[in-house]
Each structure stands twice: as C-alpha cells, then as structure tokens.
Amino acid sequence: ENSISQNTSRSLWPIPFSSVIKVTMPKNPKRRSQPMAATSARPYQKPVAGPSNASNNLISANTTLGQHFLKNPAVISAIIQKSGVKGTDVVLEIGPGTGNMTLPLLQQSKQVVALEYDSRMVREVLKRVEGTPVSSKLKVIQGDAIKTAWPFFDLMVANLPYQISSQVVFKLLSHRPMFRCAVLMFQEEFALRLTARPGEALYCRLSVNTQLLAKVDQLLKVGKQNFRPPPKVESRVVRIEPKNPPPPVNFEEWDGMIRILFNRKNKTLRAVLTTKSVLKMLEENRKTVVALNGDVDMELRPAQEIIEEILQNEPWKDARASKLDLDAFLQLMSEFNEAGIHFS
Image (cartoon, rainbow, N blue to C red):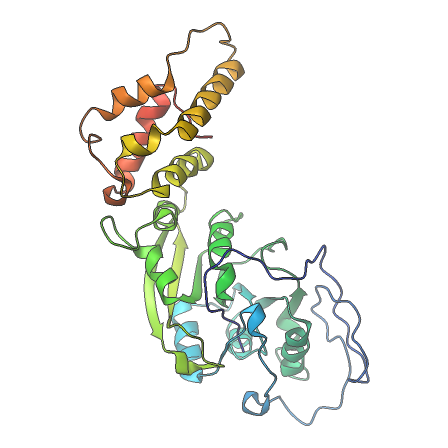
C-alpha cells in the first residue's frame, strides 16, 4: 500500500534521519526491531504459508506521516500501465507502504528501489515479497525522501505523502543523472498547479518552474474512496517528463526572479520590483557581480533607474506575472541580466 497526505505544507516528517540504516528484523515480532538501512536481501526468516494478502493486512495508517493507503487494484493497474514501465527499468518508489504497487512493479521491471520512512511499512513490504520469485529484485531504503540521496533510476512511480509534494518535485527536476519520467499521485489542487496556464487562478511559481524543466500531463483523477483511510481531498496522477537536454538557463537566477515576481503575482512588475527590500537585494547583487568581474571602480547606476527604464517599454508596461508565459519570463530575465540586474 502507498502513502498520501492531506495538504501541501512544506514541513518534513517529524523524526530526523541522519543516515540510511540497515534493515534487520527480529525473529520474535514482539521484540523491538534494530535500526534499518538499504538492503536487497531478505532480512529475516519467518514461516510463510504463502504470499501476504493485502485485504487481510489491516495495519493502521499513520496520517501524521501522510499515510493514506491506495487500495483499489484497478487504480494501481492504471497507474502502472500509464507509467510505461519496461523490463529493463530501475524504478524508484517513494512511500511503498505495504507494497500494493510494489509487487506489480517488481513483476514488470528489472528492480524496484523502495524508499520508506516508516519502519512498520518497511517490515510489511518485505513480508509481502518474502518467498516470492521477485524478492531478489526489491531493494528497501529506510529514510526521509527529501534528505536521503536518491539512487539512479529510470522511472519513479509513487503515491506520495502530500506534505512533501513541492519538495519532491523540485528535487526530482534537479536530479541527475536524467531519468525518463515520473508518474506521481498528488492532491488534486497541487496536480492542477503543475499544468496551470497564464491567467488561471492556480498559475504560480510551481507552474512556471515545472513547465520550464519538464513536460507535465494529467493522467487520472482518483476519488477519496480509493484510499484507506479516505483523505479529505481528491487526488490526481500526473506524468512528469524532464526536458532532455534541459534548457540553457541559470536556474538559481531564474528562480530568484520568479520567486520575487510571484510573491505578488497580480501586481505590476514595476510595483513588485521597486519595493525597498527588493531594490536593496538587487543593489547588493549588482555590487557582488561587479566585484567578481573585477570592475570594482565601475560607476554603478542605481538599480531602480535601470528597472524603471526596462519596464517602461512594451510588453512590460503594466504587465503582471500572473499573465506572463515562459517565453516572456525568459525574455525579461535576459533584458535584466544584460543591463546588469541579477536575482541571485
């Protein structure tokens, strides 16, 4: 089973993991388990009558960790089918839960690397595959999905805890080496933000940054009743396919500009960029760039003067971030950089 959360807050899971720990299991289930880490071997021996049946597995979800188990086999099959998993693929699954999606992924891929925070779920997914022909194809890593270094993978398939959605997307888009695609479950509103267009209410920094670096498609809408326990929100599955090669853009510079402009996306560009705090930051950036280039004696025009000069021209006069598309933002950043205005 896979884990989902009910909101998109940026908070991480509450217990820090400083490292990935070896997964070991006690012979007596009443005894406390030992610390855990990445493993592809069966960590413990236990009499097994046959493969575990998910319908009989009533392990409780920890909703504090964003766990809402995906229980509908038809939805799971649709997600895997739309992921286009190949027999040569290494698949990274974040939040495998008790393994409802892990098992069919193992049957269709070369290897599944399951990254799970909850030690109870680590035990459950290992029990699900123990004694099966696919057990050797599973590698389990216990750790925080944001803090843990991701291994190489061709494909990511995951039913994510919703509170880490933004962090996973940004980490995913900067991941190297390049992967083929990711098929992920998100809260519906978050999923729609990924594909929002200029002028739409959900158009935001996330929309612009994601669309700069990847092609995003909406695949499935998934109702609350498909989870145990049901979340308070509807869900959607999206496919994220990174642009390869990535656009030749300094992403720190780009995101610095986008972050400022979408802080008040419905205000004019001039109103946003001429506040005292923004002007102070831009002045400091200019001095740093000049110093790095060795032009310490160069006379600097005030940043506000340069900004006003650029923004008085079309198409920037009266323009607002909420209405600009990717090409417009790229052109704007180019004009600012050529005039010596930098955002990082």
